[in-house]
Amino acid sequence: MKRVLFNLCLILVASIGHSQEQVIEKKLVLGASVSFSHQNNTNNSYISFVTHPTVIYSSYDELKNNYISLNSYIGAELNDRCIVGLDVGFSFQNLKRKYTNSLSSPVSDVYLIDRNTTLGIKAFTRYTLNPTDKFRVFAQPYLQYAYDNDQQTSDGELTYKSHTNIFEIGVSTGLQYVINDQWRLMLRSGGLYFNAGKVVNDLEEENRNFNSYGISLSLRSLGLGVEFRF
Image (cartoon, rainbow, N blue to C red; front, side, top):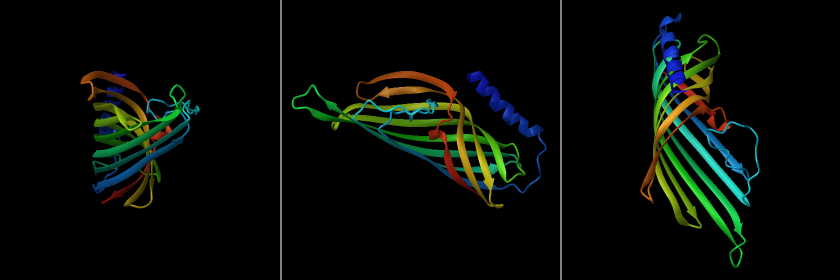
């Protein structure tokens, strides 16, 4: 899978030099996008690796999950098809679960809360397939580093705390609608990815390495945004 992703990135970048580019006045672009989700009494299928659309009801008495992701980026036009740039992103998630502990006396409700924050920086190349149309399709090879903090509590008592360093390479996709020469609307989606990193358990001073790959095309991978060209 790593080799496939690497070859795809090389093909997309190499195709830039062989395509029939239109001569344009090279400019900079600024953009921002947002992605969010809310779940109520459903399983935690928010994980990016899960792409199955089926919703399964949770076994907890109550479950609420809120997620938001914000991205901003700056890029430079190389020609009418290609932009290279840098993207900075932040995400926050709050997952709250409640179940009834029937073994306790008296019977009591237990609240489990999982809070997660992630900060990432990404270098990317965007290649537009149809640069002369109003609606444009693009592919975006990228290389990303992210730092993740995770904290879990049970009835207010800290039960788990960790931080994670993640490196990822992939190719995402998206659609663009050109309003005028300066403004564009964006719909960013997922794609192929491979990531690897290390999780460090801050409470038990343990760590483990991990890696994963796949296709991320869930609703959580969609982002709505706007772009300004100047």
